[in-house]
Length: 394
Ligand SMILES: *[C@@H]1O[C@H](CO)[C@@H](O)[C@H](O)[C@H]1NC(C)=O
Ligand SMILES: *[C@@H]1O[C@H](CO)[C@@H](O)[C@H](O)[C@H]1NC(C)=O
Ligand SMILES: *[C@@H]1O[C@H](CO)[C@@H](O)[C@H](O)[C@H]1NC(C)=O
Image (cartoon, rainbow, N blue to C red; front, side):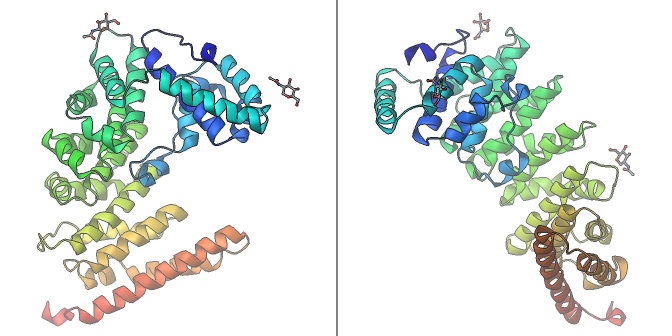
């Protein structure tokens, strides 16, 4: 076994050891034969093999809640950092093990872990941070350091240590790097570290990084804009200070510009609508600042309602969620929804469109959910309308 734990490069030997350890952990303990097979059959693509190509998807980012990434995501990352030939060999040999042999391997592994001094996460973080700050390293090595830090901050304890180790300041500084890949990964790290983590959120605010990330959302690069939006969302959701800073930086205008511009990438528009839904929901729950008017502009409301008529199912759903939260806000006006946004006819058209879906079962289920959402929005809207002052009183 020891011969498998060799490293290609001295500098990153620490993390390579960890990664190969992770690989064995995953393969042996979860008896992940499928994954082993995948490797054996070479169905893991070359691009995934390439160092630093992470394939963790965006939804996982949003829903992960700051825990470990999926085993799959981690495995693929480990694969990307390991020698393909060795991995293949290992995968084959694991598949052929009997139950007894497997148990023996597990015991061996346990002993190996106990005997080999595994570096602590703090040490790994220190190495990654030192490397990403070291401008005399090659660009490849620096990129690798960023990717390692990205993985490390998934763990809440590591995220909490980031400031103490000088990592936050370093990463925030890299938001200005001329290398777009580094800017993107930096935004990603901040979003990951800050997600559902009030301590880290506060530290990031103290560095003034939220405004910077909001500017980045407007980047001419779609990928950069998306990652920045991910970070902005992770930092301003469920955080009163984040909300204040977001609005102080005219975040509502930023979102409106994105939602109302159909030439902007659909993923960014979906993320914007989704953020509106969450922020409006926080505003309805927040008692600290009842006079917030930020989402009350009828032009803003129109930009959201307009998306309900989108041809993209996902965008449509997120827009409906946003409209639902916005209607619940006391500061929005029922008549704006009615007259200026023509909410009734938009909803009606949406429901007609939903009725035409039916062939595919999955689509039908989705359509039923959406239909229910439409009904919910409609009834909230009726209620708001009844409670609204009449035109004459305005
Ligand atoms: C694993 O078993 C298969 C057949 O069951 C055999 O063809 C293959 O050579 C074995 N691989 C190793 C590494 O022992
Ligand atoms: C930066 O990297 C170079 C090259 O690997 C190394 O010699 C040097 O010690 C590093 N500097 C710091 C401050 O870590
Ligand atoms: C819409 O977005 C495109 C692409 O980002 C941009 O070039 C254009 O100026 C925007 N239009 C408006 C009206 O903001």
